[in-house]
Image 1 (tube, helix red, strand yellow):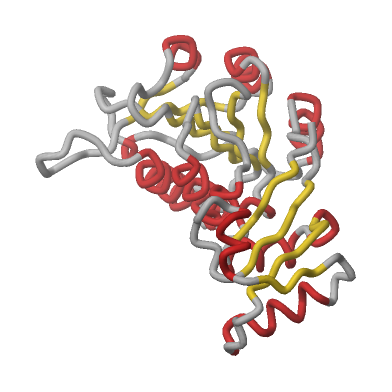
Image 2 (image 1 turned 90 degrees about the vertical axis):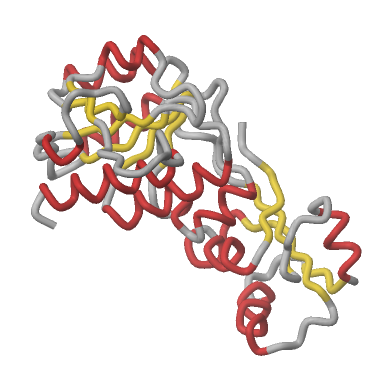
Length: 247
């Protein structure tokens, strides 16, 4: 179903105006904000021709349950999540080797938002996640992604294992991140058709996901911590792949 939600904060709302203004349906602006930092954004929002409400700060606080809205909230009615059929069409239409990111049950919206930003910066063609036990494109994701939620195609699939099998049929290599892997990410060939597969925050890759990976790779750790945050680890994998791919 289409996701109607509130998007708030200067970066997230600015991204919605830039990348998907058609789905902004209603706007709330803090009536006391007159600083130059927000005036251009407010003017752009008012130029959309949608209902605009100039309200007190407490009304914005109420709309987003006290979150840091920075004086601007919009009601956004986005398209329904893209699924398996849309993913197939995207892959069919690529004129280069696919470069994909797969997140296996990542549940923290801050992590998904950060992964989207890294995926955008690295030139990833699509981010794929399961529908169950995984975060979708929430307002917090939009805020953290700072525009990348509108530039990186995001797909939620019903059965991730089946989707991985379909990618393998397309000769897309699956490289999974695992702390116990024998080879490091820097020793792993990530050229050609590629999907990088990252696990959940606490549990890592599920068994069925791990079994479908062609290779497992780790990030060499020199300090005392045992692992990195999933969004940080994702960035390491993506940019090593980008380096290898000659970008």
